[in-house]
Amino acid sequence: MTACEPALNDSSTLKFLIESSPNSLDLRQGTDSQSERIGGLIYDPLVRKDDHFNLQPWLATRWDRPDALTWVFHLRSGVRFHDGKAMTAEDVAWSLKSMTNGAILTAKGGAFADVVDVSVRDPLTVVVTTNKPDESLLFNVSDGLFGVVENGAGRDEGLHPVGTGPFRFVDQVQDKEVVIARNSEYWAGAPKIERVRFEVTPDNITVALEMRKGSADVESNVLTQDMVHALQGAQGLVVESGLGARVDYATFNVNDAVLRDKRVRQAIACAIDKDALIASLWRGRAEKAETLLPRGHWATATDADLAQYPHDVERAKRLLDETGLKPDKDGVRLRFTLKTSTDETTRLEAQAIQAQLREAGIALQLRPAEFGTFYSDITKGAFQMYMLRWIGSNEDPDIFRYTSATASFPPKGANRGRFSDARVDALLKQASEETDEVVRRREYVQAQQILTDELPVIPLWYPDNVVVHSARLTGVVLNAGGNFDFLRTAELR
Image (cartoon, rainbow, N blue to C red):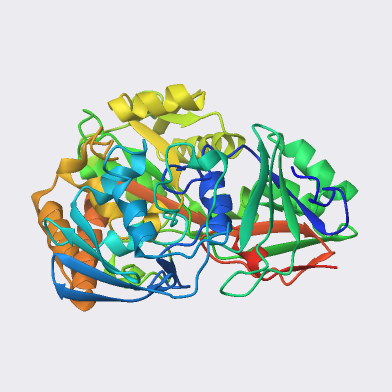
């Protein structure tokens, strides 16, 4: 920190508790939620998602599609990086090309695998050419996923990031803190908060105590709902809650001998009482999910479009009877194993589901593991069923290709249950190349109908976006994505 920077403990600094350090503030490289949420305050994307996940102009004021393989982005003039340099088409072109030409190492490069050329037409026009129609390109240059860097920015950009966003980078200490300060020259209007210190606090109990004591200003979706409930009404604290886009889900290994019949998977869905779990474990701060896309998304199928599996133990038993799974001497019709991480909330959810399935004669064995081991197992297909969540990726309908297409078996995608259906493959290919959004929606709805019937994945619920903050922070406006964009407009008293 330079000598001219104000002290971090003064009243103009917001103390924001996060559970882990970002792996890279460079949005071309950072893939964890902390990287994308803090990096999203430092860098600007070409487009931003609105409340219905439609993509709206940002650094790109508009874009043209002269043909299905070409995108022409027209850039905003007068935008400057934090070091004063004017942003031009050369910067945007480099930001895109560097993700696939080896200049940086990034898992996000695959999102641009169909890009064959990025050229500069003039200082404020960039032309992107793909080798096949790619309707997800626009989503991949949106907020949280992409940020424009200066021309030539390399692999160490994340250590000293220079963007065009509402806050500029000040300092970072791994596993301790990240400090950012207001960009007073921000083209879209300077934030009102002078400085934010993101303090890494991995222990939930410590986060709750810090918030209660008033020694921190805000936390976002870190605390369990029991902890949030305990803080509700505490002096000097405010709990903000709104609809969330994150989806929690359970995936089956559809090649497993006992789970390959879709009626067995449907029976398991009927035996799970989502309403009871939301009421008890989430204290009502979640909504039932019937698909992976968020509520209100332009491509989300309505409940009326989809097969439904309300809690019905007798229906679950009938479905199991149809497959020949009769109760044994102990009343057990089916035995299988659920793998999870050791995350506290997931552990409690798994135990509750275990008890619910027992009523239908289903004996569920739980096998929690440290996240690295758990993730390695599910990627290899070494599971019968697992529970996890999608954050951000499910805001684009391409999530279905990534999770359900035959071509997306690991390591090429996240179809970890090895589900394969030619009808789904064809619909997803058509939708990914279709430029008419009305037709795209129809194809995605048809794919969701098949997936809800075949049920390789059970969407469980959308947890609310819950932020606890001190009363001195005002004007907090949440969005479903759970990002930190409320810092753009909030104020400190």
